[in-house]
Image (cartoon, rainbow, N blue to C red):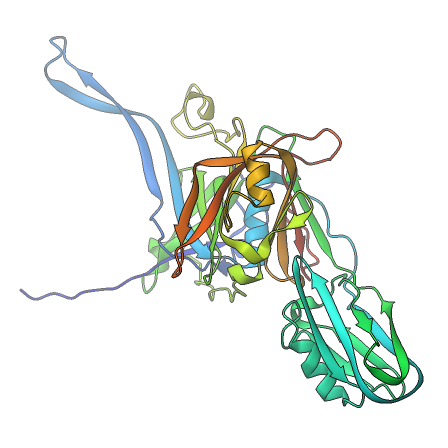
Length: 437
């Protein structure tokens, strides 16, 4: 039998600036749907169609079926990028402020006193729960000093550069993954130096550009438009969807892997043609690795022992009677229901650890989940979170079959902190505001 096999990949195009529709029923301009989304495990926009069977008076024979409602559903995953994750969280939570602050790199200076003729000085750093130190020879060149500082676990190669020597001063500028961030001051110990001492001061404090994302006070969630199709097909087969809202976002990370984001979107099945459309190039992402994520519970970092985490936010969007007008079959609004969010964490440890004790007592504490390195990261901030041990509180994982503590957390509303139960801070270089129209 003659024939051909075609391998056509589904593409999803979206607003690269995360624009929202100006109104329900008013799609974004096709020119604003300008970026192709990276994705894994996509589903073609599913059709949820409700049909009522009409039978004859005997109730035995089917006469016809009437469609009473219809909507579309789209699900896909992608390797997390800080900007992409922040944008979809903005769609989900529904409110985003204009970015504030400027980006300035941290500069710290080591200054000698006396005439140093030998020995070493020790530089130590504690940053987000990770501590390390290194001895640096008194006569190290700038290049050598840079290499010593890069050997520190909280810093790593490419994230710092040193200029000068102890003959005058050593100027340390943070860059790379530590750019545009208020890095904690290093500490120096002169005990092993001969002939003098050194001191350290912050010359320029690092500052960041921050996007604040919070829960909307409106019942209506932001809606946007997308275009889908298959590689190699004619544009006449592309479909433009309007009125798509984020029903849920799930973010997962596991040790030695990349962080992933899973999206569940609900929208109108009233598609539009996209005849004059060129498939945009796929966006280049800067994937977040779990090793660059941090977990802070009750103001203490437990990052070094973290194995897995999950954060889920759900709008529980109404998709039944309340989504449809009485005289039509297509949705007229997508409102959130009771919004829910939760954390799960698996950290190496046992019953004697502080986090186990907090979970056993079902404590209410602050939880911060840092996704990505400081220069380009998303922080999920839940200042009042009830944490407790999971139903299976201790499990065993890894090559060494080490014990792990399993914790669940539920964010609560905190009247003293705006935007709670949970809010999102995005640290990045983008100047545009999320959810612009």
